[in-house]
Image (cartoon, rainbow, N blue to C red; front, side, top):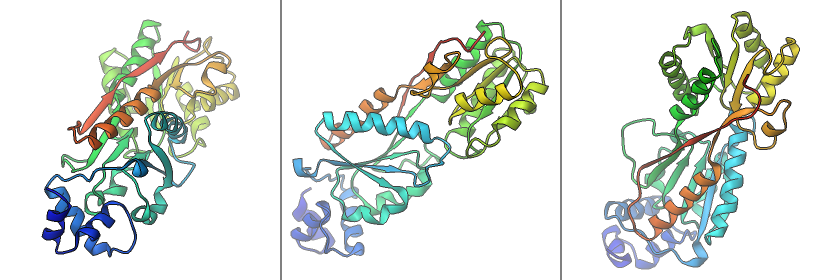
Length: 320
């Protein structure tokens, strides 16, 4: 399959096909969509020149997103890793996607963006899209769409098993976000499974969602303290610093009165008093994996639909 054959099947000139693949303006959306569909059906990927080695990083528009800190760390890792491998980076908020057809790019990475927001990718583009820190929302295998994430069950198991080793008796959990958003529901399921696995109480009133932002952490921390918890597990968001503040309002000290594990915040966790035990994604490893997948795709090598990487537990002083 080549450009001339694609042009013949689409009923257009080879120059028009070339303009579509190089993201030049002047081709109607209907014609561009037809050419992309034909190319995808024949598994044709245009050769990317050095001038076109641009990767678009698609980010949430709202900065008060439940996982903003995670997004910031992933962005930092990607903007370090991609240029080291010859790629240029363009950051595009998800609410500006109408600009994407006018951008020359060889791949896109969606960070903290729900797959439903880009459900029509295959109808619009022939370049690969990698969702970072997300999982497929259905069983349909979408062409040119891939997923790179971290093992959320391992994240929860690392935290709860550490509480078990340290003789904690009752764990309260505050999951950042809302059910169905990001990884919140995946974490809830993993928390219930691992509380039972390690013989901890698992009543519904011990597991809460914080919603967006940090406003409910003080209230939820208070409710869990009234239930007699001696440990708090708070994955996602800025829970480490927020829960530490909430505990100070209730006159509780970490770890003397209560043990705490939260998600790693690179610029805070190790400097907290006491330094916080955390669970963390391997951000540089994720960025390296994404970069490698893009390179292999452009070399016409097959790449996995889903790549799942490990979490890490950083043991510090916030667990008794």
